[in-house]
Each structure stands twice: as structure tokens, then as C-alpha cells.
Length: 363
Image (tube, rainbow, N blue to C red):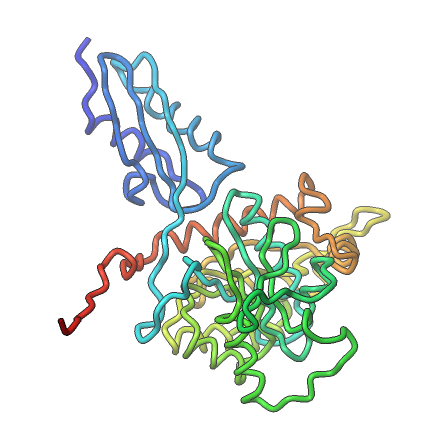
């Protein structure tokens, strides 16, 4: 029996399509080392996205592929992950201590964008990433209520703010600084300035991902984000009906125009399941998110049902991913989080931190 070669092992691994990356691990650059000792093979896989809940499944799939080779008696596969900083808009520099900023946007209000943003952040955290969430909706901040946070952030130096913490998330919102019922009667320039301050004057601590919950629409705040905030990618949240999709397309096109990659679309309230009889009905239409994804060549990251539990849990300050971590809905949020991070991991990396800073001194 002849010894197996590295090329044969690579070829076997290529036969397994990793579902989140939608490609094989060799092509994605995730196979870092292959060791062969007689009829034993060791494979080291380093994913570019957090995968705490699926690492064993991926390892088992690779193991099965490799042990299927003639000449292999045993395969040992180690799967870990390392989140890299990815490139942002050309004129901007990444923010200190934040590897990647992911914007969650919608063309119109009422499609469940904030609920999606907070559950996405919590799902990324559950996968093993360090995650923060910035509530960029100055007029209607909802993250303090959704995360069950009360009180005000501390400032140790009088100039910067310490993020609030809830369920292992670092969070910042204008809602922490004002009374919940106080209206923000501000013009556009004040709003954009507030957004920049909340982002830049918060002492974020070594984040893999900062999820930004944007206000609906394509106005001042979104433009500021596109022009002044180093965003690695954006997610568009929509519901299936035509009127929501019409506005979601505008949001998607806005990000394309300002060269922010759209990581995919989340279709919210895609189906209603009757809590009494189990009857399923597409009350807002069917397949709109999938059609839009195909039209613009982006990925449908996931479709979420219209479920009373999602609303009750976020209103109660304990979103679904932490309230019911083993539920089908949490499973969908987890899948959306992994697909989002996997898609981002395939983009160009930011190497600015690797280059030494040149300082010229007059001696």
C-alpha cells in the first residue's frame, strides 16, 4: 500500500463544500497544514469566521473525506478560527480596537431591522467572537430596551465613554444618555455629529465585529456612515412585500455606490405560523428576498418567521438568541451570523496594522 500524498489529501478535502463559505476549505485558504506520517493524516483548519457551534461538524466532514482515501487509516482534524480585519472604503482608516464594522440597514422602518441587528450581534458572540453593537438610530434608539440596559455609561477621563455591557456584548446608544421618552428634536448635522462621537469616543475593547444598527432610509446618517465610518460590509433587512423590497433596493444601491460590500439580505417576517393550529401562511408575500438577492447577485442570508416570541423577548430586554438559545429561531439567527461572517472572511483583508509606522525625527 503506497503512502498517501499531500495533493491527494487536498483533493479529498476539496470534495467537501463548507456550507457557510459556499466553497471548499482549500480554495477558501482555510487549510493551513497537512501532516502525513505513514497511514495517519493530520489536518489543521483555521476558519476566518467564528464557528463555535459548527467546528466539530466541519472537522467530522473533513475527517470523513480524508479517511475515504486509500492508504489512510486515521485522520485527525483540528478546526479553529481567527477573525481578521477586512478592508474598508478607500479613504478611511479602521477604528482602533475594532476589526470589522458591519452595518445593518433597511430602506424603510418597521421591518425588524433592530431586532435582527441585536440577535445577529448575540449570535456572533455565541459563535465565539468579541462583539459590540452601536445604536445609530438617534431619533428612535431601541437597543437599550432590547438589551435590558438601564443607567448611563461611565467616563473615566471626561472625554470618552465606556461601553455598556449586556449578554457579553459591548453596547453604545444615545438612548443611554437621554431619558427614554425625550424626543431628539435635532437637525441632520447634529445627528451625524452625534453618530461620529458615539462611534469614535467609545472605548471599544478588542472587537472582532461592531454591528451598527442604522436608522431606516438613505438620509444623512447613512451617508455619514458611508463617507466617514470604515465599514467592512452591510446587511439589508427587508420583508417580502413589494413596498418593502422597493425601499430595500434603494438601500442596497446606496451601499454599492459608496463601495461598501453588501454581505447579503435577511428576509424578516417571511412566513406566519399560527400558534394555535400550526397553519403556515405567507401573509406578506413569498420569495421577495430571494428574488432580490438573485437580481443583485448577493446572498440571501436567511429568512425569519413572523413569531410573537421574537417581539415579546426583545421588548422584555432578553432577545431570542439568549432567551431561547436552542430554539429554531435562534438556530436561524446563528446561521445568518455564520453566513455573514463567512462571506466577510472571503473579502480582501486590511493590512494597515501590519506595516510599521514611519516617524521622521529631527535630531
